[in-house]
Length: 190
Image (cartoon, rainbow, N blue to C red; front, side, top):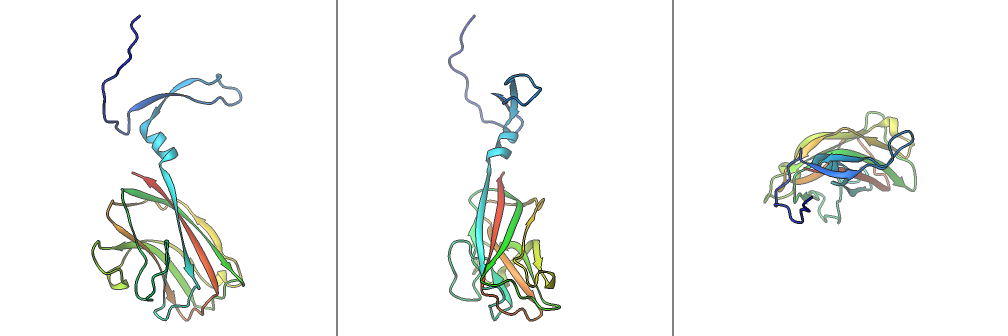
């Protein structure tokens, strides 16, 4: 039988198959050889987390809270943004309040967070921001708590080159809360 030592080069597509071994589970064949799609492998390993924080919730005079990705923007009108190097899908997010005290959110007050875009090459200010999808809202129901949650199944696609921002819009008279609201975003490469 001939032994093939070289194979032609090809560009993989999402439905192409790779041969591998699936680790056995109780009651199954011991380590069977299986075919795996490129998509299934990408779904398994092509995900990454991005984190940021909202510093001192409700402290901006503008009534807006901006998620800081990696550094603090000095002006309270500038929105911190990231530019995407590749197409992605936002799968889910998680958030948690970290403060010396629990949240203080009065009756009728709320902060509604969303993720959106700022056009490439434009000034990253609220006038240039367009919300793409709402994420979560902190309300009086979160008063006195260290609010935290996971929001699954967002499934919002963004394109390479887009500039993303997470913005919280305050309604009512949200008083400053000393602490940080951490936000973690789970992206999948497309």
